[in-house]
Length: 208
Length: 45
Image 1: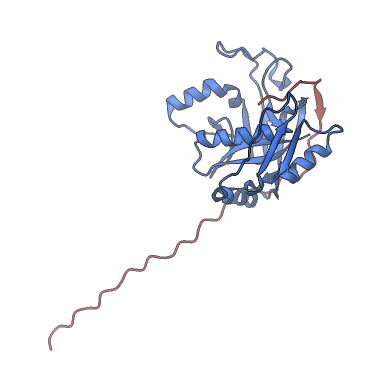
Image 2: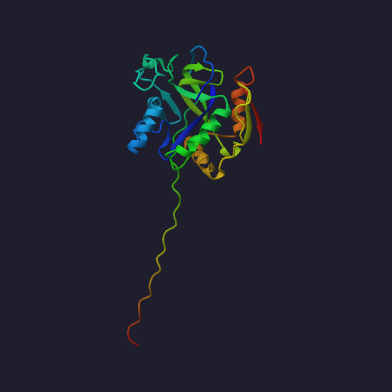
C-alpha cells in the first residue's frame, strides 16, 4: 500500500522520531530531546533498518499520552491506539509537514520525502494508512514539489504554492545513490498512489 | 498526521523487492594543500 512519508536523514542514514536512529542512539541536547520525547514519544518505537522502517508499540499507556491503548506489541498498529508507521495518500499532508519539519530538524543535511510501501499489519484510512512496516520505494525530488493543492474533504482548507529551496536537492541524489532508490517527481508518486485507489483521492492538485 | 476515517485491519505481504546493498557515500575529493617551498639562501659569493 503506497503512501508519502517525510523522513529525517543524516550521514548515518534515515532516522525518525529524532531520538533513535535505527539501531544506534543519537544522544543530543537533553532538554530539547525531552520535549521531543514527550511530543513524539511513540516514534521511539519505530526504527529504520536500511530502507525499511518498522514499528513495535509498547502498548503501555504513559501518564501523558491518552492516545495509547494497551495492547500486545505485535498488534501494531492497533485500533484505538495511535501507533504505527504513518504515511499519507495526500500531498497536502506531507507538504505541510515537510515545510514545518524543516524548521525543527536536527539534521544539518535536511529532510527528505519518500514514497513508501506499507506492509504487515495495516490500518487503511481515507487519507492515508498506518502500518507495521514500510519500505522506501523512491525519493521525491524536491525540485518537483511545486503545486497548488486544494483539499476537498471538508471544502477548501489548504492552498499553498510550495517551493522548496533547490539548494537542498543534493540530499536526494545522495540518498538515491546510497540506497539505490529511484528519484521520482512528486507527480509520478501521486499517480502511483492514485493507481491503487478506485475513487479519486480527496485533493485537487494543480501542478506548476 | 491524520489518516482520516480508519477502516478494518488488513494484512499485506512484504513486497518482493530486493533491498539494495547499502553503498557508502563518496567522500568529497580534497585537493592536496600545496606548501610553497622556500629556495635555500645562497651562501657566499
